[in-house]
Image: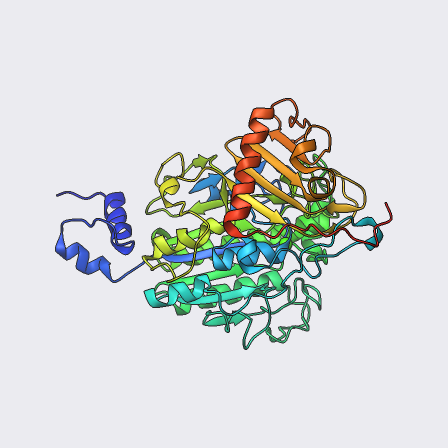
Length: 489
Ligand SMILES: [Ca+2]
């Protein structure tokens, strides 16, 4: 039996994942003990078009683009929510928000009460320790895990990364942004200060390189969860100067934000170089993702509608690639919808780790897609946001809220949004043709969600609405129904 390099690597992967193995017992012995390492890069607030590989002409991301090109780019990749904490809770548990109760950041009753028609569902701001996190699920498979950067789910010893199963925590706590800013001194109890003026993104990269180096002989899981590119918008002056010389492009025009992205990109380049230097590149799976859409004060998501905080595409569609030279054909793209709850089962399959006993995983492993399949088994992906997010951003439904309570489903190229205020208070399904409770978009032909087809395609509308309502029942999604007595119309 003759093996070329790719066959060899595939055999290694199959073995690691508990799948069929190559026939050579020597080969099994040599590679059986080694499982792929996994680096999950979670950027904060990075918009879909904030990278070169998705068409930005202003921001420069040559390292990110190179890794994307060496792997598979996902063009319909979604965060589970339009803001930070819920997407992270979904990623860490592999469960949709109704199962852990983290729906939003802070209070679910944001904005002025007099503008809210319903009493929203209460929000959990931390992840309860009874959940099994991805780090806890990987541990029995022999993985050492590190969380480096923003955590936003609580603070150690109990609810930070260490309390939730990671072996290493650098800089992670309950905060959603760097309280002391991006330059040392950081005022972060989980991150000893560096030299004055050290830049946080560079520091997290340094820490990541140290972790990789220290664990090069064993499988590791590195959750590199940059604080960048969340506010405060702060960057290194030499990089800012570079972008001040560039003409804005397609609404992207902030040189400081561009420089923040540049520092992230340089860090990715340094990590890729380290993997090469240590001979780990072929056996390390690199995921690149962001937790919600681009922030209205910093970037442009066009042609996508809306920003961080809205459930239009600009709030939830993310830049994503997976590089895994042993398995993923370079230069490939996948347009199947995937969502951040999919990472948990994906990572377990890659690691050959068992699913947590007694826990439902809502996502589906994307490993078949990585191996060239075109579809997953499921019919649709869902969102549930029974809360209010204040703010006036372009593309939102009204000028007071980035979103009001909403449920969302995407099936194939179609997307339906069910707005609970109109649904609950204005006659529900009986009045669906006139109460403005649902919106239906044909994303394949209308990526900007400009044309609401709810009444033009009632069959599709009803099909998606039935799917969404069935899903809400199946996960026990709480829908706000109590009118707010303080609402003043
Ligand atoms: Ca975020």
